[in-house]
Length: 454
Ligand SMILES: [Zn+2]
Ligand SMILES: [Zn+2]
Image (cartoon, rainbow, N blue to C red; front, side, top):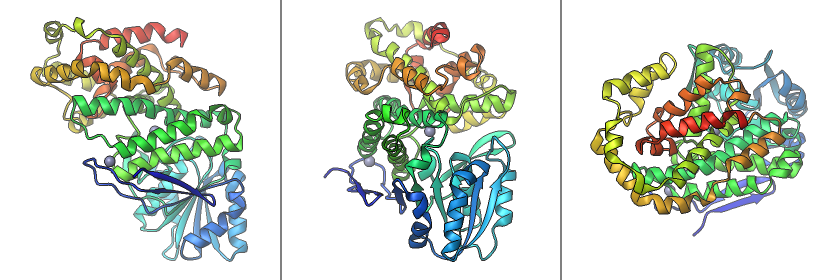
């Protein structure tokens, strides 16, 4: 039986989550509504799906104007007691101060929270609701990332971005006409976050062959549905039509649901995400700029696709294991590399989290052999990958940066990014593959040489 994606009266549902893989699959108990005109209906959907009449509405100044104001009016006319928690100023960060602002407004008789916004507003509300043990609903205002379905929040703490455990929303609501009012850079971010899943799928398959990762065919099916929906509507998305906005948010939601199904972020994030996180962490630690999550992921995708081109065209007969062995770092050198290439505090965490941060020669050799044996099939798996140029063309049409340089990241930071982000997590990626074949130095130099023309 095949996975069924059902769209019924503006509601998105999944059926037949059967799969033979080693993960337990959870079907999230979450209602998802996407349709034009939903903004005016939001109060009705809340009434049908949430219990109680005391609601704390969380938004920022912009999302107050585009949606929250109207939602509060409608809720009040239906007899709800609404309290407004509005974040002032721009840009809004997911800081402890923001969360404290929300927490201070949660009363014992608050029945639920309603976030009206995109990434930061949703993340902060999610965590505050989790801590206060209150249910929460989401009205999303931008199709900019796949985290609406998430159970975790990306929060700032002591100058570092960390993932905090929370819970999923009871209902998610999106109105394509509202999504279309978000600036084009947010849609570019959404496209970046969806199309990154092409890279994730190929990397995950590589990981299943070379590093014994569990691959989930059900997640693959969902991701391919999301990718197809997004890719076949790119022009509509760029034009910000209702059809385009509906396709983009639905593809982000389908992709995001994989994380709930396997309770692990492997289906949505590979090394392109590590690159985006690295730029964010470096900007926090050393200053300078970093692109938003999805835009950074899109740029990371461009570099990952260049890396795949290198592995695809590599001749496995030329792989010289003795040469690779001779050029290996010692364990002490590798530790020093991770501690100095990552911002303060992060290197130590990488060593703790990634049990593959140092491979013995025997381990590396086994992986090289597996990769060589898989190479022909790998080239076939790469058939789904878009060209890096097609991502650049898309981003250019949306005025989004198409390289680290254009996003304000200098060449030295980019060089470090390309060399060290493979180590960020234990999950395998194209960067690990070319590194273990002794090709990462060459690949990094090739990207740096191309950088000015990207
Ligand atoms: Zn993402
Ligand atoms: Zn599965």
